[in-house]
Image (cartoon, rainbow, N blue to C red; front, side, top):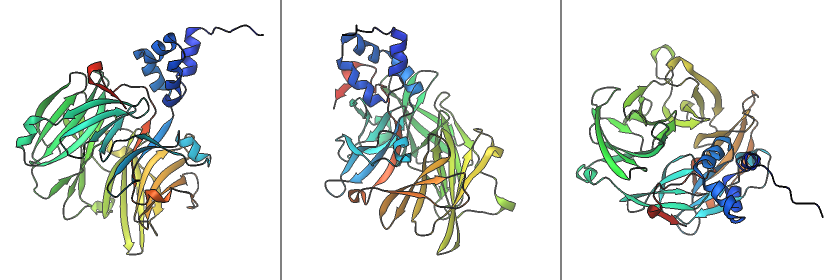
Length: 377
């Protein structure tokens, strides 16, 4: 019988850190040394750095109407690219909690009663006890706009809540996962003075260590700017959209997303009621307006809406989420081909009213800094 091979500690770390978080968790039961290695902060950061395994968070009707489930949609996007069988696995029974954002494998979800937020890691199945809303915000009769992200300088995850009461002065509540407390800050809107017709996008888009909200005109959705909240400086700034053609409004409807770590804009333009198109733009150099590059133009024929989700591993395809006849479909769009021959992946029928909320990485990042705030699902 061959003798047992003992691999050096560094080699073991290099092997494990390249596995999906869901697979790494299984090795915790091998031995105490293996568990201590996987739970160590250095290994968690190393696995997050090398990890390319991504999955989609689905929000869909599974058991009954208006009941939401959080599911693992395939182990990674590469399996979808290789035409593997679509695998939907239930992660956590989170009832009707609504996803507010995702960062480094953590997901922030607002509870159905709207009074608190849950931070969880679907891979490790660890949940932070509910974070109750900022009590100061209860005195503000206004809509709340949410965002969730990571500040690399303070090594802290932050839940941000912007109050849509006064567009001229932005009132913001910030919850630090490390400190476990709420703080408030006020800043004049850097984009433009008060305009009562403006409407904020409810959930922020995380890109370049900043949270982004689209500001729209309630009457004309084509009029919009982007306000960004820097998670390190905790200050707002204005981010410009692509330059308009000859000063005219090119799009009838615009929206922002995150794509490959960059800020992305989706603009919809109508020619006729049956003939309209979508342009997908990417800001290649953050903060530089001239760096906006048109990635692709797609026909909207037969689709109610189109959203960009993620690049393929090779970077040559773009995964799109489309809505048609109240059903959701995933489409691989080849960026290197001029024609629009697309690979269509149809989700199971039970997701007929669902939508893709978050593209998430499979990580070992813990949602808690204090074990007393931890729940195990």
